[in-house]
Length: 85
Length: 397
Image 1 (cartoon, helix red, strand yellow):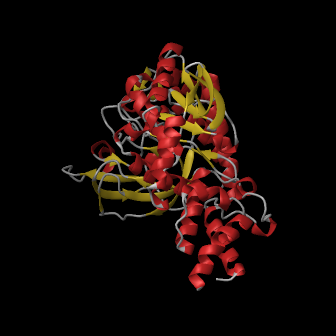
Image 2 (cartoon, each protein chain N blue to C red):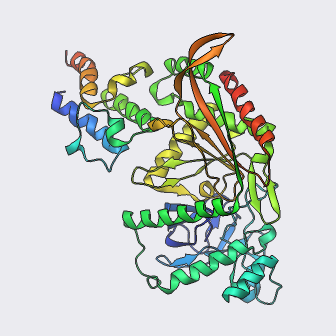
């Protein structure tokens, strides 16, 4: 999966949770929670969505690393790269 | 048309899911109705066979209007005016169910010729506003018409005068729904502040044990089965109500009606604005895992705008948590006709004294706003203390 494909998948998962969000204006370095007004249930559903889409297990202690788009890309790059080899 | 909240006045029938002649069981979805809370699935209260669908899709009708006639099993087929007295109509007095009957009995509007049962206040108000009491559906015990019912009927009458003609396409635009939701919230909250003498209590609770138990439990669970702290708080509220049951129930003209079933209304904020408060049923009797699953489902459907009628009308207490953005203390406004609302703020780390030493602990502020006509601060204090005690043994929740 390329970086662009990863980003598209992450935004698709996010779009299912916050369908009204305008991703064109999303700052990749600022937390989704602050930009999209997500609550803890949304965050849990987002993590479940990433788990399903990328097939990775995400411990609760790692949720903080998934707070921003950049954070998600960095976190998911490792399992995605491993899947390619 | 069931009332799906204290101040709902009308709803638009979108679709019948059943046809005349169909057999329906209790709890089955019979119709879909558009309200300011979104599309609501209407459940059947009385099993039987559908005899007549009275309201057509696209029609907007006031709360209390008969939507359909269901012939109860064992009841002979009859016609004419007598029909309504021997059959059950699909209208629900669901905002004030009685303790003895988990599912409220179906209610029919008083038929002509029988004495209209109404409270003195309702009679006076009806005379004042020129409302025919035989056209009003009562929400009081046994279908007695109360002042609120007259007000509602009067307001609906006024609203309809300038409203779109019947049969016009239902308003589905989000902005219109939001406007109506705002009006509904305004009416309910204004009524609460006008009629309910609130008292407020707060208690800060050490959450060390609960958060540690939660982190440990979640570390051992797949992501799809993980728990949120909120569900433990909701369960603790339900169990604490066993100790102070008089906070759980509804108010009517006759006074408080304490309920033995604990249906917790959970306040769910909508990002587009507004809030809905659907009920999680029988919280005190369900496991944490079952509750978590139900809670996730409820939040998902609330945001999508597809809740069921029983979820919007049967809450016996409300829990609101505004900690998501950092709020530490919630001063709640009771959702009529309930008797209390419990608020939780954000779980935050604070200095905390333990055995003479200052330590850092995660704490949460629990608040209670309760109806002073029904309970006093002393009982409210015991309730918050019970929540605190229950959260010190999270494994038993």
